[in-house]
Image (cartoon, rainbow, N blue to C red):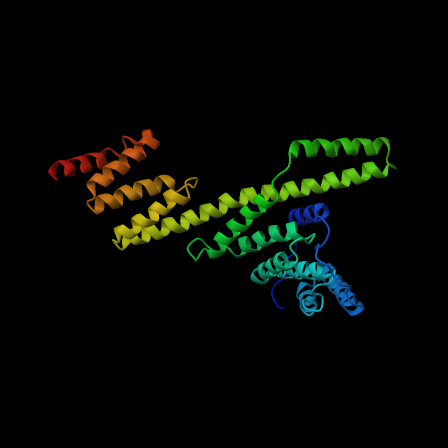
Length: 298
């Protein structure tokens, strides 16, 4: 595998480590014992990964995909392979491998991390707003699924618990229970960080989709295909109500109806727009008069 290697950002490392620590055991399906050769090759891949030789690690792990199948190492191999692809900026291969892990080993201890990283992979694949946005849509879907599967805990309580265990360890540093509770609570902080990341990523990605849709509408306007432009303005009004393009979509929809001489429909949409944005009364006065005059004439 070739390509420029990308180092994992510190915050992303925290995310993944946090998820992994709080995750449960490996797959609940019966798993066979991996052969000594598989274990040796996996250990070698781990060493290469630790040295950030992600392309070489991926090559070795690819050969283990089938020999580790239905063994205790299946999830480990797939996750490390996906991580190797991701860090080598081969995001499509990473997404495919995270998906494979979630399907083949759904109860793996890597499930949470894989779901988050699957969304991250599609986020990386999300292109410039003028290009096809299928990967943007997939990123939104996968982040939303992550939030649904792993809802956020009480962050204030976890933060307080972390501080409590920190203070208890100062009083009695040799108490193993305090240390274990501290590490477990610290891992939950990592989980909260991933959830917050996902929650912030979704509106940013939706804004890109809204911009993409708005540009298409404007292009149809330039081509004087007003009905087609109206369809895309409607899509913004229906799907991206929280975007910065919502008001422009209302005005665009009214303008398209006026250009198509749909005076009654234009008047209804204008009334609805001014109900939502009464401060725009003066700005839309010209359109109001034009619509009213043509309604009288008809």
